[in-house]
Length: 482
Image (tube, rainbow, N blue to C red):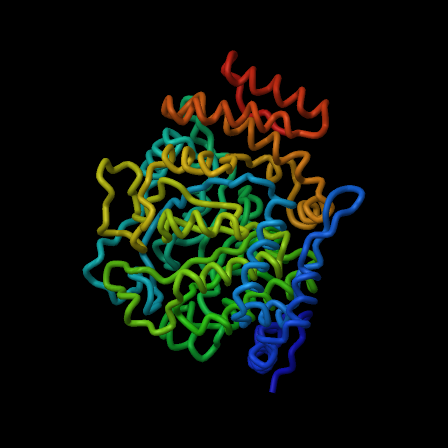
């Protein structure tokens, strides 16, 4: 039997089934242990230091106790601390991005995804480089600066060379005042050599959802294709980091397996990355299974309700305080609004999950990976965020200034990242307001910028930010950053 070892490079040892089951038993036994729960909550709370705040985070066992807790007052305390942590390290900023689907050709048999190879009626499509360029121009005309590219796993139709060509094309497109400044990549697990190629291409974060950490379920859900190899898939982040990619993004697809098991596995994966590489996940995504082409979520019996979903989100924030947390347009406006205060720091906006969808006037559905619940335009999302007290940020400065991996985390952990992020968010918001916003959004945005500038504590930084924003407004200059 495999022994739990967070420093191991073997999937069965750092995501250890026996340890997860023992964790769930411990959590169930202590879910009403008020003294222990209070100790865990106190450990999770941000502690002020001379330079800002620090957070201890939580172990997978501690976090699982909180997730199992059903005491209403303690759950509300979790939510309060999650919001404290989010504000301490990310402020009221919300980073905005969009997915870009390159190809839905896929050789895998994943039973929860409409791209599975036995789906014979879905339209298969792969963008040419000219079509990639057209999609990028459409995204730039919306105001996007950050993309997450997506493609099915198909060595013939979607080889690594195709992905690299697409990245090169995306970065080459300079349309009016538009530029895509960061390309994150969500493609199948691959080799160290291919990860090196992605790093050399200038990607931001490499994202790979585990889907489920429960190995038996994983093998059933992925019956055919290269993704069937649980160990190879689960160990992908270690190969990515060996290949030089220091920003990686985790996630499970909630609804495939029992959520408490998935949660424990997810936190254990984060602990493993920290133990082996000295830096945890740059992001954690929280997607839920949604309806799509030939996929009915009611066919799966592990769906979670909105209250459980909120609790999971808050507990992730308490356990892994420094990670970015992502929620997509899979979720409704109401759900996204609730989760923003519980730790979410990134959202997608104006998203289309079909191949070539951004160049179409009407939203196409024949190549969608999942139904989009929040179908508002990017301008509507930007206005909504500001109306709720959040700064929409299009910032990509850390990635381009080399503040990635352990350097980003060290700055985040001592609170110094705030000295860069807040003014950078305001300057990129000003770019959006000048180039893309509706009159109403523009008016709301500049009112927010004026108020937020006064909150920058460093007088010199505040003065430079104010001068740069004025230059954005008056002289058409762009891309200022700290």
